Image (cartoon, rainbow over all chains, first blue to last red; front, side):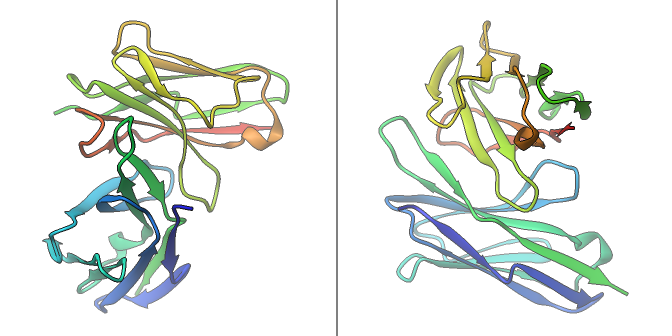
Length: 114
Length: 113
């Protein structure tokens, strides 16, 4: 069964600190992995997308890594800001006869405090 | 580039009533998706359109949910009659094709009382 598990479920950090969110998946056959940021009451916004051959990708203060052998990904946030408070969702895409389909993780709820 | 537009932003209805949501995808995006996101959970795909044809509606509760995309552009999702467990955020997303990155709308938050 295709699954995406994220940890931790929730996290509280102080402004300016770094943090790392984890994503483990069992999706097959793998197509790509995306990290989304979802603010409360808003739709998810894409942060990064990585294919099988990519190990790391950055988007400003966000850096995602992918280890396709161990089926693990991480999202590292540097110098956190209050506006980083949101849910971060790992989404893995897999191939099907009808095109790619997505499997969503349940997200990590991040709160950045002063 | 304009994003995916959804309306209304919020809706409160009583159980057994009907409700409809509207989505206008990004211009030129052939693929359109409706997701249901219950609080604390990841989005669940309800239905996927390719132009005006349905590609996947395997998780759509067809006894009460229906969706259409008649001209291959805008789409509506309807619930009739609504149940308490339908309370969720309904997200619309679009992409250029079935293997491209998704862009999500802001969603419609439905509360059934």
